[in-house]
Length: 53
Image (cartoon, rainbow, N blue to C red; front, side, top):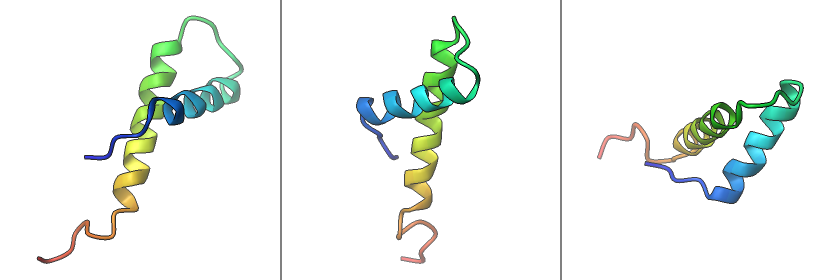
């Protein structure tokens, strides 16, 4: 399973927060969404994913 760094998550969460109009009190939502986005992106870039071994 892919594991993005805390810094990567922080940057992505900030981008999502800005795009949403900087709402207050939704830090956990943006953190979780950022973490999932990054994990999904890393998994999709895995050259071995789906390969017959």
